[in-house]
Length: 74
Image (cartoon, rainbow, N blue to C red; front, side):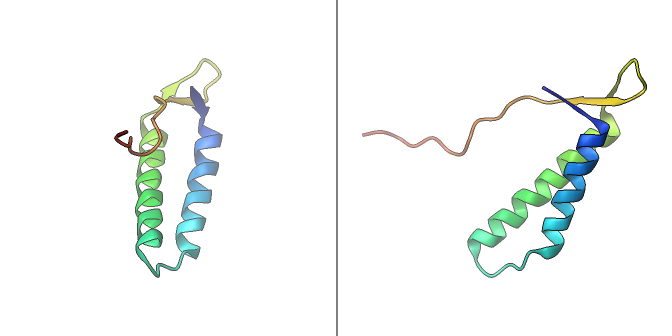
């Protein structure tokens, strides 16, 4: 999957807005803030290291991740 530079910039803005509005009260909030901080870093990396396209835009490709931890079935 590929994202244009404009989309990455928009996502980065949204993550930064959410981080600035968050109030951390418990572990769940801390987890979410940590996750958003990691997202912010990844988006910044995509902004600086994206591949150029023929029309002058930048495209960032990334791999799909699995969701959460797997649970052992008994």
